[in-house]
Length: 258
Image 1 (cartoon, rainbow, N blue to C red):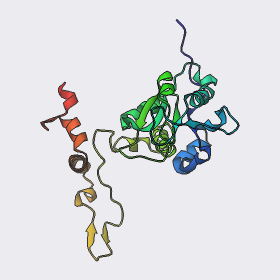
Image 2: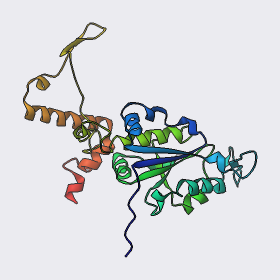
Image 3: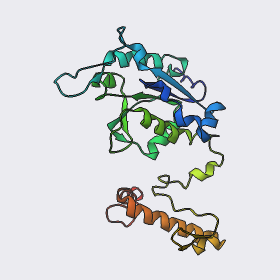
Image 4: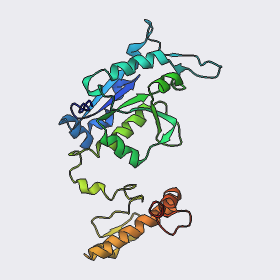
């Protein structure tokens, strides 16, 4: 049996894009930027246009079957993917290849955790009407969507996905225990937060006070309040998550009853 080749270097995102200047963008600031600068994670960009076969750097063409817009060519995208996966880190093809598209599977925290556990990710940013399906099938590309809306291209979605993953990597966030109670980690939205001053007067003259339980110092009561607030927010704002957690009858955790 051949032993698996361990990944080389830190978790790395390789982004295939027509606009490499959009990166690192906001990922160069704050905690993600500090982690990037200190080598906790890596970022590479691959300019898809550099793999165009003609002197005009053509990367798209009209769709077969007619219709508006243009489609990114399979041969061009294939060449860019070959270049992005040619290094020693990808000998075992362990990095998933993800295409950011509105027709993809919705991104959730569980998939973010899965990507954080991988050696990295190859992100394919489409433009125009999309990418020729043949190259997506040939490379077994995973299609992911950020939500039910359409962006001009995959770059902003790629930035969001990378940010969601990078903050889970060891050493990026100072207090990693703070990740445990965030939205989606327990199947619930997060409870509300409060800080000083304990009494704040808004611009309409109304005094707004921090809930008394949070000032009590009673840790069990605080935990109970936070749990109740997280459940209330989830029921009201994300009934889909609440149903998934409790089951259609609302009597308990559906997964636990299976």
